[in-house]
Image 1 (spheres, rainbow, N blue to C red):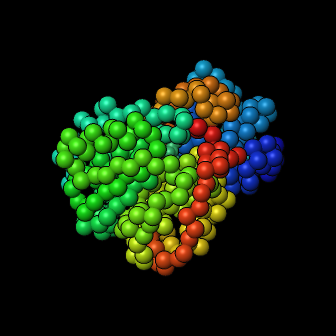
Image 2 (image 1 turned 135 degrees about the vertical axis):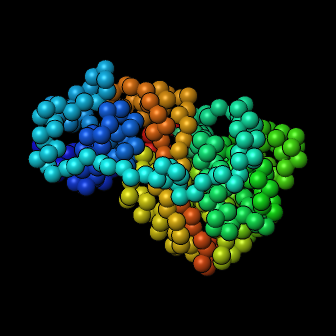
Image 3 (image 1 turned 45 degrees about the vertical axis):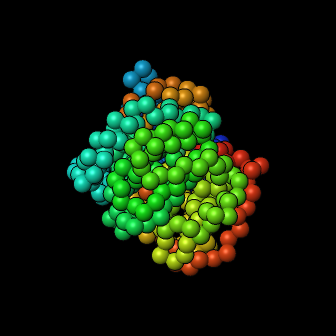
Length: 350
Ligand code: N4P
């Protein structure tokens, strides 16, 4: 057994391109975590790949699945040491939790948001929902404000189980917000809050697989979204966000994970951004922290998990990406209705 055997096994069995560096990351994570979901989270590798790797390691007697979780055997520890792999060490800033921004200035709006979100619609599997912590929603506001993307700006939110539209409305910084959302529960919820509190927030029911209506094209300064991570979903969310922007200097924000996307997929997505006239200005690791959702044992990831232990903390995280338009290009507003936007070999949490 060595890193090479491990990475070849995963490439074949998970159908995700893997090399020795990917294998190393799982071994490093095994030295610091015993919960399957934490191992996935710390390794920064796609969940189906981690699951396959652990299966082979268990077969070879290097790890054991116990009531305490995933444990390295004596043989396993020796193996990792011989491979020259070291435990991970985190040096995350305790003040901002690695987000690079704090939300102190929005205290009042944040407290109100905390009250409002208590009866928000629960995340459902049908739309691959999974919302971020309230702190994360507000950190997005703090980040965008720090880049000058909110004050006096016209903003569109494409899919909003994170309630970014409500948070923007509460802070009152932007000129206007339009939310496009498919889930009727969320449309009704955000509409009710907007009316009750008199927020300048417009909520439109829309399926992003369908083309944007004409009056939304080239109308906004900034977009926010947090799509499922297939190429198709990227086109439906980020792609539509891009064509909704007015032109150069306009910006977009979205989250991308390691849990459901390898660097091969990251590269494809980054190439799409460049091709469409944008550059990446910021990528903030683990910026977005998701609340554990209720449908854990219904998702594919639960079947793939080689040990059926529930998550013990908020393990699902994503990097925050900010993009800016350098050149406004003609991009088709395609109909994606018949595409599967939820499933590919790397995705597993739907
Ligand atoms: C998926 C969450 N399946 C978790 C549950 N994804 C959508 C979340 C929308 N807030 C996150 C994908 C990150 N791009």
